[in-house]
Length: 119
Image (tube, rainbow, N blue to C red; front, side, top):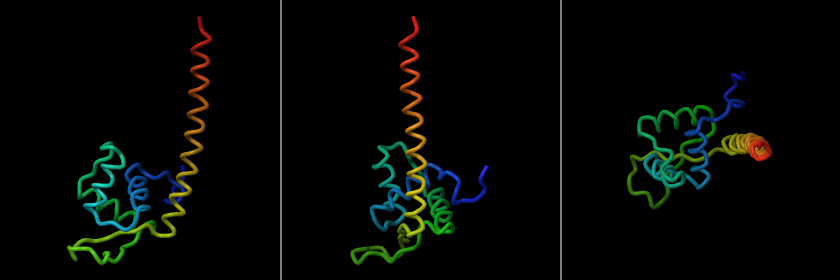
């Protein structure tokens, strides 16, 4: 079992947040809204949990704090963006997920064929 954070599978919320940040820098509340919209409500997060995960992602170097955009109206908000290391991590995770999905599709197709051949 790998113990290196770079080789472990991302948790669903971590993956979803990195995907959301591909859209561009964002503050916490807007990330919650993006998550709910992009996952059609399947991923919901409480603010306390969100900031704990954001802190872990920042510690791993996958995201970093960002300056607020010029149109920002609340200087207290913390903005986050995906780092170059985060993009590379997301690319690696995407490749791993694509391999898993390919395997699942192949086995599902095989199980349907087996199911049809039975009397």
